[in-house]
Image (cartoon, rainbow, N blue to C red):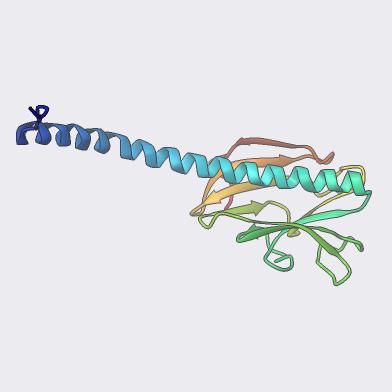
Length: 169
C-alpha cells in the first residue's frame, strides 16, 4: 500500500500568504532605511580609507600626494562627484600633469557627493603626513542634504562627526 498523501487546504494557504504579506509590509520600510544607512556608512568609510591611503603613501614615498575629485584630472571644484583621484603631485600644483603618477582612483556612489569647504579643489599631504595647510571639512551630501562630516586637521589626521544642520552641500 503506498504512503499517505497529505494535502493543504485553500484556507491554510491563504492564511500562510496573509502572514507572509503582513511580515513583508512591516519589514520593507525598515529594510529600505537599513540599506540607505549602509550606503551612507560605506561612502563615508570609502573617503576615510582614501584619505588614509593618500596620507600613508605620502609618508612612505616621501613625496607630495594629492587627493581630488574628478574622472581623469582634478575638477578644481569644491563639489566632488563621480570619482576620487590620488596621485603623486611632483610640482605640488594640485593638478595632474603629464609627469604625475595616478596611484588610486575610486568611484563615489551615484546619489552621493562630497563638499570640500576650502576654496581649492584638492587636499595635499606632505612627506611627514601633514596637509600643507589644507586642513578643512569634507561634508557627505545626498540629494543636497548633509549626511556626515570628515574633519581633516593640519597634521593630516581625520575624524568623523555628524553633519551640522547648517552645513553646505
